[in-house]
Length: 170
Length: 300
Image 1 (cartoon, chains in turn yellow, red):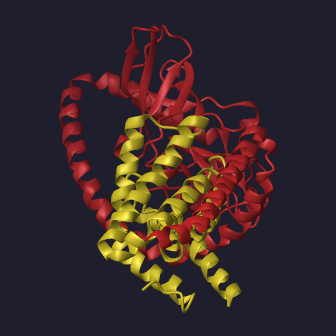
Image 2 (cartoon, rainbow over the protein chains, first blue to last red):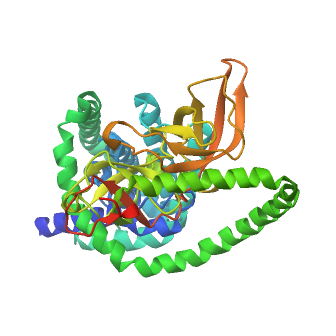
Image 3 (cartoon, rainbow over the protein chains, first blue to last red):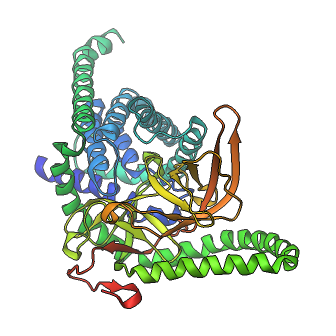
C-alpha cells in the first residue's frame, strides 16, 4: 500500500512540474504561470503534516530545479518548497477548518515560496532581477495560485486522503 | 490543552530536526552546483532527468497543441489592440518620412546588405518546436525545444527564428535541448550596429512581453547609436556560441548616464519571446541527424 501511495505521489509531483512548463505557458502573464508544484506541496502538508510536506517539498523542488528547461542552481526551489512544506504543516489544523482558510494558506505559501526563491537568487547572484520586477512577478504568481487553489486544493486533498484511508482528520 | 501541548512536543522537535536536515541538504546541493560550475556533479543528474522528462514534455506538448490555438485567440485580441496603436504611430511617422525618401533608400540598401550577408554565409539549420517554457517565477528565461543531440544539436549553438536571434543552447539531451533566451539577465551577446559597424555587448533584462527589452553597451563610448539602428551579432570563433550576422533587434532609445559618461542603448528584440514556436538551430555544416538539415543560400 505504501508503494502505491508513493508512486501516486511521485506521478502527481512529476505531472505538476511538467504541466507548469508545457501546458501553462499558453496562459502565462508575462511569463508567470500558476505554480502547480507549490500547490501540491501545500496540499501534502495540509493533508499529512510538516514532515510529509517537507519530503514532498524537497522532491518537487528538486525536480523543478533539474527538469528542463531549468537553468538556475539546483536546490533553490527545493529549499523554498521545504520551507513551505514545514510552515504549512504547522498551521494544517487551521487550514483544514474551512475552504477559505485553505485558499488563504495557499496564497501565503505562494508568497513565501516565491520570495524565498527570489531572495536565494539575490544572495547567490543567480539570475536576479531588479527588486521592482521581482515584486511584480511575486504578486502575479500569488494571484495565479489563489485563482487555481479553489479548484486544485479540494481535488488534490481528496487524492491524498484516499491514498491513506483511515487517517482522515475529522 | 496541556495534554495536547505535551503530546505534540516530541513531534514538533522531530519536524524541526527534519527541517534543519532538509535545509542543510538544499544548501549542500546549491553549494555543490555553484562551486563546481561546468563540472558540477549535478550535471549528469540533470541530463538524466532531462532524458526522462524531455519525452514526457514532448508528448504533453503534442497532446495540448490545440490549446495553443485557443490561447492564440486571447493573445491575438491583446496583440491586435497593440497593433492598432503601433500602426497609428507608424502612420504618422511615415507621413513625416515621405519628405525624407533618400534616407529611406539608404536604409533599404542597408537591409538588403544585411539579408544578403545572412544568405551568403549559408548557415545550416535544424528546425525545432518550443515544447516547454521555464516559469517566470524561476527568474530565468529558458525554453525547451524538441531537438537534441540525436538531431545534431549540442551545447553552445545559436538559435534563431524567422524574426531574428532567439538565444543559444545551454544544455542538450538526446531528444531535447534547453535554450537560454537573449532576454535572460545572464545572457550576453556580442552585437554590432548595422550603420557604423561599432561593436558592443547586448544584455538581457529578464523580462518578456511588450516590455521585454535588451541593453546595448558600446565598447567605444564616443559613438552614439541612433534610433532605428539595427543591431546584429558579430559572432565569435567558429560560431560558438553565436554565429555572425544574425539580426538581434532595433535601437529604440539611447540613455546616457552622466555618472560614468557611458551610453546605453535600449534595443527592442526582433523575436517575439512570448509567442515562440518554430525555431532554427544553427548547426555546423555537414551535420547529419534524425531530422533534415535546412541549408540557407544553397551553399554547403
